[in-house]
Image (spheres, rainbow, N blue to C red):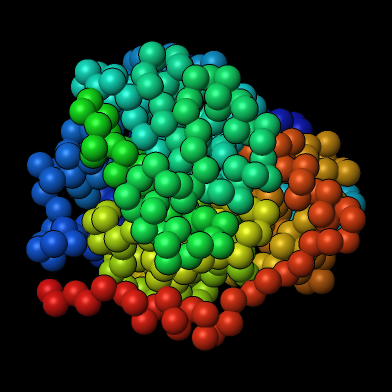
Length: 459
């Protein structure tokens, strides 16, 4: 930082400073993420095979490990300008409340109707579907941010949108569901009796609250059984991390404006879209040997794929109809507890982030939800934003890191992703305020039982 330079509360980029390209961190990875495999043959998925599920252009992006930058189509840039650039905020009030010498910044992605970062990829995927001449798309959603974002994007472009929403979230968050319906989406609680795979899951787990893995299976079946439809996904896939790199690119540009170099970069981790998008350009510098940063992925203790999972090939969905991905996983049959961070209830993790984690370029921590909501409450009281439960995982560890600085006297720059707002999560806040919130942590036996069902890969 330049001497005596005052950092404003909010660092805004000008419209002309918005990124015009997405950054593909895979291009700078020496060890590329392992390829998706066809579950029937065990061979890497081809463009033709992937194009039967995803839009062709998105399938190309999914398979491209070498192109560093992709031009953002002008139509998508124009849509981005409705809510981007998003602000990078200096958390002065939180710093004072903690009494820490650390400087804390957060990239706020909640300044759009979807309330989260998910719109960055939703408009991109809907755009490519529209350009391909499709009738509509199908998807899953956990907490509802992705489903909301996709319904917005589809409404803007005139596409049909079918959303399979994890049952517990469907019941806990009726207003999130109604926002999707307002934008014209058809929303179905998952698992449901409307698909064959849904019926199968209900037969095996009749009392299940659902999971993202279940909802993915139903959405894929719905897409492949209707002419003119394709499946789109809000996290996990490499194409999604590519689109979400706009978060990190803007964050880096804002920090560079004031010669600020982050020491610690923190993001919540469910499937990887927010974390991957935030860290990508910084990780690229680390991979190229140009700079060094500490990256921390924060996941719920109730669904700890990084910290307690196994790095192996697994199905991306509970119904075992999707391609196999090599990732940190708890097993596709793992049924997470109905914790309140619905967007983090996924059994696996992005193959890109899994490879980076396995190679030692980033670390991971799991946190219990009562501690997460304590951090959310503290943040809301001093910073004036009610954070989403998912984002609050990052807040928890940002506070922990800031308190370490208080003990050591280090003046670190801490950056975290505030992925969205929690105004549709009042059921969760009610449980916390009433003292009814619990911290369920799966046993080793629970996880081992699920991991025992991992597919056997001969190649």
